[in-house]
Each structure stands twice: as structure tokens, then as C-alpha cells.
Length: 110
Length: 111
Image 1 (cartoon, rainbow over the protein chains, first blue to last red):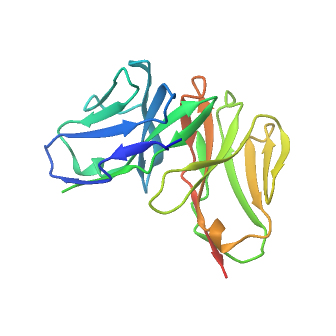
Image 2: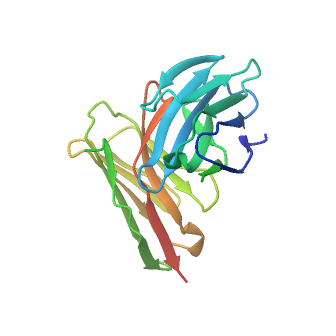
């Protein structure tokens, strides 16, 4: 099976812009989680979707949002970008209590 | 105080050495414990998963859990240059959908 794929792999944006990141889970996996990874804070949970419904949410501001489609693909949106949003954004699909991570999208905010 | 604490390193050891990586946690609700390995420019991959106190072995890797001390360890025997990566401990909650990670320890094995 193909692994979790994320697009784009790299992105450069300026402050105030918005961005949308995409994640395609492993075929058959219905749960998708998103994480932000930074050198200072490490990996932090953003939110999790299952069957198009957000089941869990981390402690991030409302500028961070997501959605999941009927084919389990998920998107994450960040509005009004701030410099501190520069990070590696990882998504993971889960099956049988194991999360499988994609390679991430490296977002740089200038 | 973070729920999961991990020494960020970096840690450099010679090839063949035994490596010890450690995490402490404060949330007694954590019942399952995971170790992930992350190579540069890659996502984390699950190395080991355990839910009971004691040791679990998988090849050169041994995971150790002490719930009374809220302390977990990962040991790597006969370390290889290919083991050079960042190692992250993680603890699931919300039915495993949410993982709380340590900050990761960057490990370099010197040939």
C-alpha cells in the first residue's frame, strides 16, 4: 500500500496570507490527525477527523481549521499567517491503534 | 510543566555502543507508550508500542516502562550509523487519536 502523502512538500508564504495543506491517508484508513512540529515545542496535536467529523482538537487558535472529505482525504487551513506558524505540518492516518505519518509539509512564513 | 519531558540531546555515541533514551511523564492517565523514530526530512515512524510496566524487546531495541516512577526508556544495542535519527516518545489519549510527544532526542552514531 502507498503511504500517507502530503502536498505540497514545501511552501513559502508571507504574513497575513492563508494556506491550505492536503493529506491523503493510506487506503482504507478513515482517521486523519494533524500535528505541528517546531524545534521549540516539538510535535503538537492540532486536530483529528474521522468520517468527515472532527472528533478531537488541540489547543490551537481558531485560525487553524481542517476538514475531511468522503474519501478520507483531509485538508488543513491556516488563515492570517503569523511568523510563528513556520513549522513542519504532519498528518497521520490511523489503523488498529497505530498512527502512520506522512513526510510533512514544510511551511515558511516570511 | 509539559506532560511529557524528554532530554533533547544531541547525543553522539560510537558505533556498537548501547544507547539509552528516556522520557518522564506527569499524566497518570497515560497507559500506552510508544517510541517513534524520525529521520531527517521524513515523518515519524513507529518503532515500539507497549502498555505494561516492564521490558519489551524487538531485535536490537528494548522498551522499558516504569509506571510507578512515570519513566520510560528505549535501549538500542549494537548501535549502527543507520540508527542516527531523532527519537520521540509518545503517549496516546482520546482512544489513541491524539499523541502527546516528547520533544525528541537527536541521536548520532559515529562510525
